[in-house]
Amino acid sequence: MGRSDFDPSYAELPDRLPIFPLPGVLLLPGGRLPLNIFEPRYLAMTQRALAGPRLIGMIQPRDDSSFETGLRPVYPVGCAGRLVAFQETDDGRYLITLAGLIRFRVARELARDEEGFRWMEPDFAPFRTDLVPDSGGFDRAALLGALKVYFQRHGLEADWQAVEKADDERLVTSLAMLCPFDPSEKQVLLEAADLSRRAEAMTAILQMAAHQPEAEGDGPARPN
Image (tube, rainbow, N blue to C red; front, side):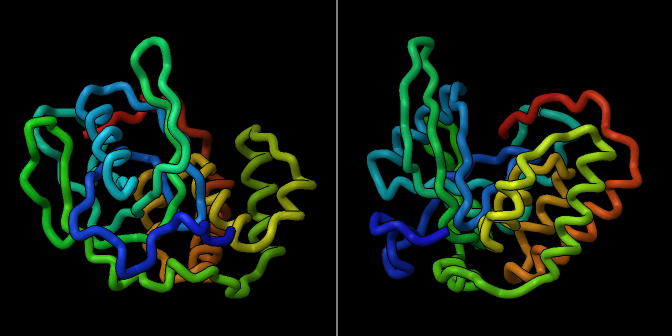
């Protein structure tokens, strides 16, 4: 999952970042996240990103049990994604894709402007190594074994040939983003120090989840 020539360098990262708080949605460095944008404030956020460094911070609210009018607190760590694909729809939506670039720690929340979306001052320093491909080793056989049991237990399907051919970084990143883990579990994967620790954490999550009943009827994720 190599870097693009269009990616900013560490020195070019911005000192303020619009954020898109969305529970249960994970973006990791090197991953690709498609998004359907329809709320007016996030349409404005997308337009602002397109006019600037094209970066949006994906971050999870701390609690998705209720959706109130006030601002919900967010987790301390998110991931900045570069807007790499953009399409308008006839019914007034934007279909975009973010390419995960680098994680950030929230230094402080900034004042919102008249368009209503939120801004953060990001601290990228703890995650500078995200800009370098990670080839750290892990127990791939244990991860795939736990994944197969998990998929069988929950009636999920996969292209196992493609899964087994994926390189380590793509495998771990894609599975972490795509598997239907709880928001708190996704946050654990996001905050893992490196690829090997993320793989170890995901193996443990898969092993535990394989023995639990499938969750019923979760409502759709909504931003705040």
